[in-house]
Length: 442
Image (tube, rainbow, N blue to C red):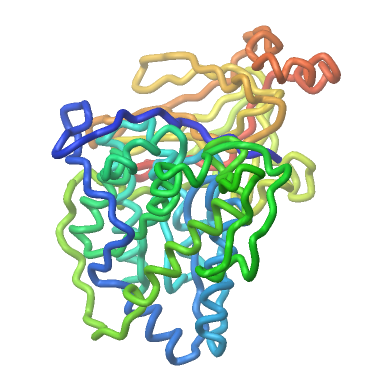
């Protein structure tokens, strides 16, 4: 399934100490290959001792690809052949740190990783600075509270939209926010984009193009001295779409940046007891929580059913949602919670419908269908945000409202509708989990 990367915006180039727009905008940080800070001492100690090491790769579609995630784990296996390295693919295409803060416990923490790579800066490009700060700091604090001895490393990737920022010597806005957080918690970071930006600026790389005609120069693709495949003009073709690197070109360049950083990040250093500092923001999402829809305090009404584990709709998402419900028009989800934010973990898909969301007596409607809905993909439905930290009442109702799905699909996707209109005919909702910054009120 092709993964759609949502929320990518072009960021303008910056020079000197320029600030991005917005009242809470960060100072755009200098683009450097990597920053060590406290490094990865726990991981280094286990690797040196030949002990088992679990690495979680937490991010969006760039990390979900069979690219730098797999290549970096293989590289560490070569560097530390006595250590048994296990990797966890905790990436979901098209998602940012907001969903990350809520799915962290299920997708990462339960595996008890020794090292967590976090890659959300690209998918956070369309998010407000305030939201990025609360989500990313919430992720860091959740990891530190649950697994204080585990290491954390931020990584930054590149797209056509933010390339000029890197070439101007500055990190894009979301990565600059992550650097603020990295400094506060003394976390290392690796700029996977550094060499890509330099090669494109020097005319040795193109950000997008066809793989046709590319030839390998020589050697092992993870050997920094070996050549990466080039096209007929002698240039490296980074990706097909300007975002998702080809495994044997763009992803190899990403892995080489890690290879460059590893000696410093994994250098022997004294392991000190980590003291969790005060949060940068008191309202960060460190108390993000997740509840299945049959949790005490959640009331389901109307025509709805829990799909069996082997159901063809539920099965592809079982590793993300252990339980999935199907709601027909008129069905409802009701609950009370004390907190500031609520979201529903649901799907966009061919059969998606309109929802009515009522919070403390005020209602609005939202459509869970867009131009990409030829297939089902995980999504977040915002229910309430920036509320006072009090008790709130929420009701979600699946509306019987019908709309022209064909006209909403992007033009290239309308052929799928014309070929199989019946798969678009149902109007319903699929959801599995309630996410809260706060707690359910029974």
